[in-house]
Every structure is written in C-alpha cells, then in structure tokens.
Image (cartoon, protein in one colour):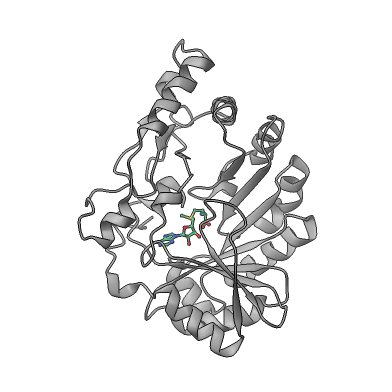
Length: 306
Ligand SMILES: C[S@@+](CC[C@H](N)C(=O)[O-])C[C@H]1O[C@@H](n2cnc3c(N)ncnc32)[C@H](O)[C@@H]1O
C-alpha cells in the first residue's frame, strides 16, 4: 500500500462497510456446505483486526472445517500467537523476504524488522501453530542474493520456506517480467549447496512444488505462478473484507456478497448464488499471461490477500 496514497489521514473502510464477524461466519458456513474444508485468514494484515481470536473461535465451531490457517507479516505475531492458538487456529504462514535488515526494510516499505518477525515465528512455534510456513518473495536485484541465508537459517528447524515468484498482482507494483526470478533458478542454486529431492504435493490444488533436503533437514517449496501457472488446479475462492467474492487472484472485480447477506436471502439462496459463481468461473489469468493475452485491469494484492 503506497504511503503517499494510504497516508495517516486516509479514510479506510468504515466498520459498516466491512463484513461483521457474524457475516463472515455465516458466509464461511455456507461455503463449507458447498464443499470447502479449509480456511485461510489473510489481508491486508489480519492481526490488525480487533478481536481476531473471537472470529477464529467462531469459525472453529463450524462443523466440516479441517484446517484454519492465517497469513501474516509477523510483526504482531509474538503478542497474539498464544490467543490465536487457544481460539482454535491451526497454523500460520509468515511472510519474510530477507534476513537482512536493509533488504527487509526496502521490501517492507521501511517498516518493521526481520528480528521482530523471527520473534513472532518463535512464539508461534511455542504456541503450537505448526507446521509454520515462511513465504519469501524473491525480486531480482533486490533480495535474490539472500536466498541461501534464508534457507540456511530455517533448514533443520521444522519451518518450511516457500519461495514465491514475484508476480504482477494488481497494477501499482509496475511489475516487469525481468524482476521475477524463475523458481528453476532458485532450485538450482539451493540444490548445488544442499541437494534436494522432489516430493509429491500433499493434496490436490497445493500451490507449492515441494522438495526435501537429501540430508533429512526438512523441506522447501516453490510457488511458480509466473513460470509454470497452475490455474487448472486452483481451488481457491477469496472473500474481501467488504464482502466481494473473487474467483482469481488476478481478477479485475469480485461479486458482491455483502448486499445479498444483508438482504432477506436465506442460506440456501446464498448457497445457490455462490455455487453459480463458482460453477461459472473461467479465470486463468496466469496462463493467459504466458500467452501475452492477459487483461490489464486487476485487483491489488493488499485488497485480496494472496
Ligand atoms: C498480500 S500478503 C497478505 C497477508 C499479510 N499481510 C502478509 O504480509 O503475509 C500475502 C502474501 O503475498 C505476498 N505477495 C505480495 N505481493 C506479491 C507479489 N507481487 N508477488 C508475489 N507475492 C506477493 C506477500 O509476500 C505475502 O506472503
């Protein structure tokens, strides 16, 4: 979120514009009725939402959910980890782009510190929010020289690092293809230092290709949405904080569920509406990008959460 636009006087969404916890839980219950069994809380930064453990506890109470995860920048994680676990959160994914203060701050807009994120990871481990995954986005010329340090730090710790190809999500990052470091390049780099062996995905639709260290020191993953799109196996529906349903990370717009939720519609009617959107989806942005025919208009990452 560029600071010149989202400055301290910027009017963010009013609480009425955002879905309430009751509305989120009702929506989640309807999705579970349609076959969803895994939820991820993301953002924006989810740990900025007041009383988040209350929401987690209510979501935990929905029968049919096997897994509740949360993606966070880790800055507030140390103080919230225990309460999140107690409320029923299963695990966290923490974004951490470099274990180097200058590089970290360059990628975080000059805020936070990687030490604080490491403290958050430590607390999350202590609280049992495991297995912890670390998301590391690699941008050429910015943090590609820190890859081996990151692997070295987490190897053998039980934390799974996943390298994400820097993507053209939204428009304001002015993405250039040359900024993306293909996962194959990273794989080769890591493999030369610590030999890796490919392993099968844990489940259909898992976004990362997985590799284990040949010496038994854990695993790393690669998310290759630029060089090897996986639109065909994507099973994710995304819901924005103001109630828009997105069927693709790169969609230009979402389908409004907030007004239907606040109307007289029954759960069955809402399920019909959502099911119709899902059955009708035809998104395959990353595949179209590879064919140079992707649409230009896209929602920003901070709005849809990754
Ligand atoms: C948008 S954040 C939202 C959740 C939370 N605020 C966080 O920082 O983890 C979700 C993930 O998207 C990743 N991300 C952001 N912009 C990206 C881009 N252009 N390409 C690839 N991943 C990106 C972030 O690094 C983070 O791991």
